[in-house]
Length: 190
Image (cartoon, rainbow, N blue to C red; front, side, top):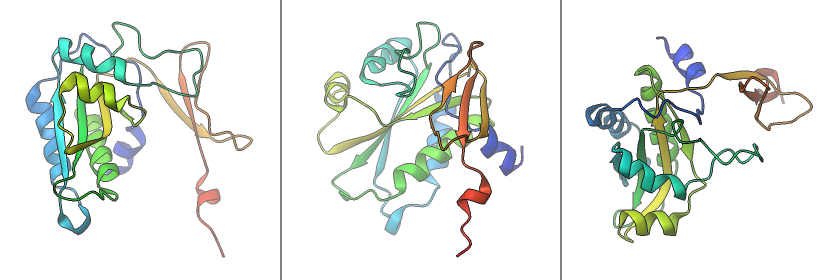
């Protein structure tokens, strides 16, 4: 898959085939891609927690908020939930400024997931205190992002933005529509 195709196919998926199990080695490989990515001042302050056991996934799920624009949807139903999570932590013993590292890392992992035939969603809306308590995450780590990973079980369509409305939505067939600004709108000619 060329880079353009890979980027265009790397979407935020929120419904998965929960029965599809992801091997730990695949998840480690995704983190290895992030490990090789750029890091501000080469500090490399990010750490990762990997979970793929159904019981662990059940423990993580209640700490996450899903799809704020979909007001009548409380998140994936049982059977549609992610089968793995990668939690990105910031190690405050290295630095307390993580700069762009989490974004670079998360996107690299998501690109790798797409290449592996998987999909995911970067979740920043996290009940951090609850998740910290549930997983016994030491205070020296900031919980930055939770990456939900699984085998996508939904169709996501990208389309040009209309009326400056950035809100994603689902049609009557459950297809997830994501409006994107046009290239002409993004490239300024000053």
